[in-house]
Image (cartoon, rainbow, N blue to C red; front, side, top):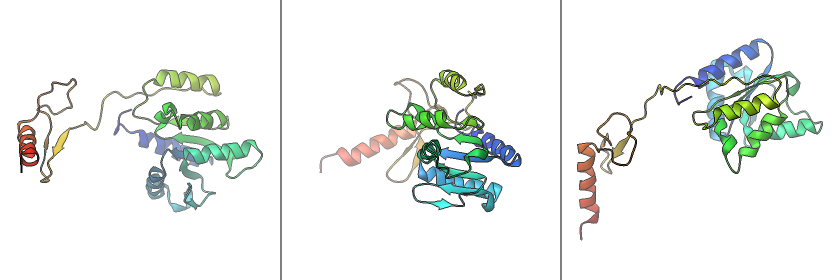
Length: 210
């Protein structure tokens, strides 16, 4: 689903239902900065007493029904649980939300997402969010093959928040980059007249002999 299509809303509603059913929810992201942002966001929605965070730098309210963490942290918790150590309430885990799940394809970190999915307790539902998975049908088929619950693919092709290309001149002036409102395909897209003028002005100022 493209950016702005409502992925976070889906995650919020799924979290709300899981908490109402007295199940633990874990929300993972690939970055500590994004985890911190989601911690602040979900604290405003669900209240500070219901939200905790576990990252390499923070450990706040670890017994909360909604825990925010990086995917590596969850993978390590699942490793510990497999070895008999229970650090969080995995027995009550009802939902795992994996944000930016296109990291499955990352050559270096993709294995973390794979192992997290494989070791995730069978009673927990998985919700994978991404705006840029290139082979979602294959991922859904794989999830269905290894999980007890079939994976349903939800796709949204229309971009709710359109992309716009602009040129920021060193003077601080911001102008459209192309004549068209949307970003055109191909290499011969016509530039906006004002962008062309500013390009020429910049080249004149920086490339002329001194």
